Image (cartoon, rainbow, N blue to C red):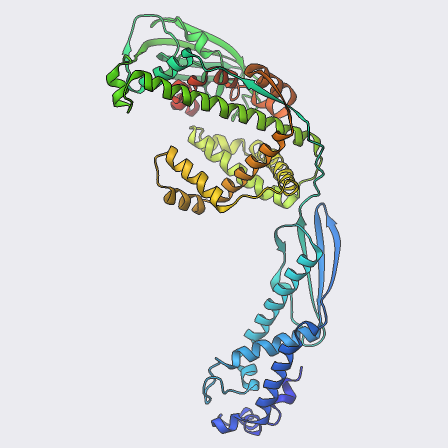
Length: 533
């Protein structure tokens, strides 16, 4: 390596290492050995790219995995040692010498172990980065590299081996001229009336009534859920006369079953427990849900007056109606875009065949599972029940993660083909828009998005939005009714069929009547008392 010969002429240092204390002066340091060291370091720096290139071999090591083997030439190792010792000499503190005056041999003896580790780390970083860049691999995540197992030899080259996951090759189908259904919904005065009533409901008063229950009334009832091995009792449960859930079972006909009932009367309905129910023992079984109604409460909504309009910030009722109409029209347009975007996603998902890297899929599945568990806990499902169904939840998370990743790879390739990019100004503009809608400061929202990792999600969403809009520019758009569009999408998509029960059952109605999409109408906004029993 040249270090031994560089310092052999320093007799004072040699004798001190044999037993005597180091007593050197500045003049002692100005020895031929130091000059030789400086020349060697300068030559190594000037050599630069003239050093032998690393030898890189890349082979397959599994599905979307590559095994990379790198051999770092001895000349590069020696040059990196010279570089590191050269940098250290300017700042190293060695007893008996002023800073920057200690001979290299003493620096080697005092800091050799640390320098060797730094040289290894630096060479590994440089070699790995250069190898992946020159191989043009689309690497996912960090290389599976065990740094502690890599040793820097005293002689000969250094070997580095590791595996990396790579993105799959995406072959996009021909999408120009694809047919897309556009749902058409006209905002009527009835829609405006319903929306205005929704706005007045928070100021309404629930009053007990002897009259039969009507839509959106609140009932207090003793609820029992029975079936094979199932017997759940939930007294004094509050229920809205509307579609909702009982014991985690979605009930689209709940409102119909309760409509017209009075206090003291009963109602009953029978349904099958969906396959996705949190309690594995319930799945697929037929259950009977009985309601013994104790009380009916009717929501008395205040009248729409000029005073109410003024308190809401409008100069007149007519101005309020106009503003509500514009809002509903915007909601309809947004729903149109959502349904059309769903069709574009489905088009690509059905026509692109690709494998998802196992490691990336596993990591993403963990995040999906964590979100699902948090969602269940917030809905009141006991932790013990979640743990009992953990295996099923893990399987569902894995399937969902694979689907999400597949779409992300498709979106990435589509964005490259269409030259789609999202600028920082576009992200800031969307953050400002979101902040205005929530009456918050954009700077604070931006900081929160960056802290919880949602900033990158927003960037991806914007890129997806722009890519889909670009695809729709060349699509053949066919106008249909909203219900036709939803029905066709549900029939064509396997995921749509699964989600049609319960969660997506109200979508056609929400599209036909945009004013109904209010939290006051949702039964599951209230705690489902039967879930925790």
